[in-house]
Length: 121
Length: 111
View 1: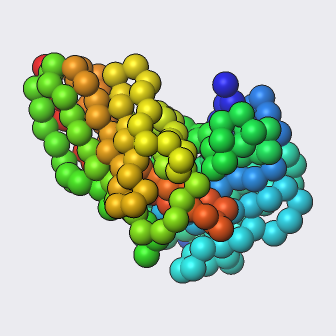
View 2: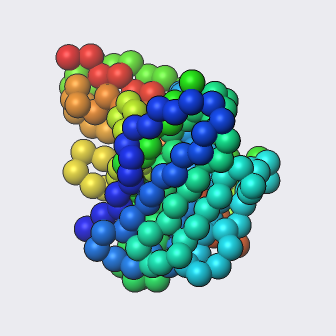
């Protein structure tokens, strides 16, 4: 099956620093990657959608200058939380999709990474 | 909001019993998916049901979809302690390029 990895799985940082989270598709080329955020005991909320080689599309209310997304290759997307503050502490999950995955699994099929837990002190 | 609603929010049952979770949504969909999330972990895809399907089975899972009522249910039969997790429905909505997740049901199976 399609595998998506995230790195790091855990990160603790001081307020004001920037944190980069990587999302990789290990055995397929991900033309589209999605970034989600999940606060404790809440559902996943989509932050942005990124297509390889183009700018990410951000959801309403998500600051694009604070959450920088780069999808420079078909196997890697990065989310950088700039000048992180305690309220940015959350669980960040990426997912990936491609035309091949859609063909096999049906429209809308995404494979999810294991998530990255960010704690900003 | 395009987010779906799930009920109950929390469910506690004895091992061996069946667990039923419901999901309601608001717009037209291409398909509806169910995911499981163990505490602090990533999502695991359980099952996908297309808009033209009414029922689907996978092992101990049974999913139904009623597009006229814009609702779906997930039934886990003969539950096990290892089924303890949060369960989310997610809709692939017509005209949208991403999934919209429900609010989730926290299932606790007591050994």
